[in-house]
Length: 622
Image 1: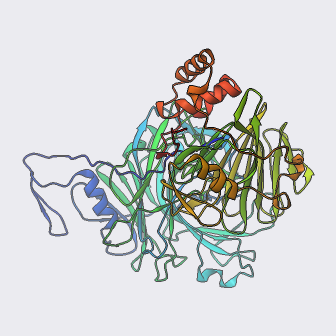
Image 2: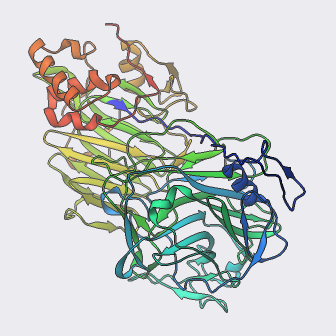
Image 3: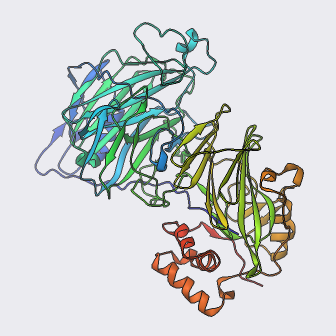
């Protein structure tokens, strides 16, 4: 089999400039601007996001003055922007946990300011959604949310639950007729009567009690923003010793509110470690979060930038998890944007795609018959047969697969025939024929349905694909086909120490590691690949997750490497034609031709839209 994954790339945004002729402006900060040194709108927006305000309350500003003017606050919308609950959306749509967040690196300085924006917005002509996940669908009803992680707060002192956490949202809500910018606070799983001024909230069929409130200062009204103006919107959240603040920039205007820091996010102690930014539905209710429905063909490239005052702009980690319960109807395509400023930031693509990736941060993939990709973005062929440890991370997560020979037609190749994962004490296995087994017992799950087990492990079946997730946000997607399976393994945040066939050594794409710690540079010799590295990751029958699928029929290694050039001429030509018609990149052409020859034309779709690997680890020597 052959393993591959899309690359993980952080990006920067190029700043445009705006020039005004024949003017000279003196800002309240004392900075003098002439026609030759006016800041660009982007630079000005960044300054305003960081410029101090004279007091708590509502303020506005207009370009190019770096000065805040007091404005009247208004009541904030009485609509909860709910947290994630239950399994991710069906169809891999974005939100309710299926999102990415920029995470501060371990040992780094906590986030004190984060800015969400869009590098580009293409093909967006309309959007609609409900308010609070109820009532009619309204054109241009949506929210921009810049969300923190869940964090410890002194507010949980009144809670009997050890799971109580604080959560803070910096929000721009657009209801189709008007907009408002405000801060919303949550006590997650408070599980007691809410403190005065807080509103109790529970999800349907859930006994947990949440508490939420808007900042008591209210909200700052903003003119309605149609979705076609999305590219001009920039949302900032700030929390430091001066309090917490939300700022929305719309071209030449900024709208801001400095609040009361109801959860103590800005006090010393390092609580803000993740920043999630996206466009979602406008609020939710006990049934979950609402959805922003974009027109077909809509494409977005959101950016979340973090500012922590550290002199060196270290790249943030990518946390493959979101905190908001609201969603949109877009997907994460299997490609990454180019690297552009500003930094440090996390940039990602959203699109309507037929084959979305489950893993926006990193996708470590075992595809159908014969291809392996490491979490560091390396691809290499691995054609052995038997049960193998595909991935393991810590004591509570592992994935195993069973590979069987392609003989008699293709004796030096293999295909996946069964996949199993253990998440803590829960074991989920998919055997040949799309047979689902949970903890050793057959389990019936209708297509389009999801279930959350008592252990917290979630299982969904969407279009024939099984998705298995745990509370640590590991995800496994298993796609049964006739005679073989595809499997993708998603890691919660990156980098994470992953071992097994798709592991790497110290996140180096040129190095892989055997079970005993021996490190091999890629490409490696045929003997090292199979007799040392591969054999080290074989699974003993006593440790196999795959026993519900029967005993291992065969264990062995190929006699020689197998390439597309080894295919019969006529079969190779037909396979290449199929791959080219599907616009498979040249980097994947060899693997695609082998898959199509062995498995049929449908196998080419696996490679469609897949970004090039960081490194091709295959040796072309016999």
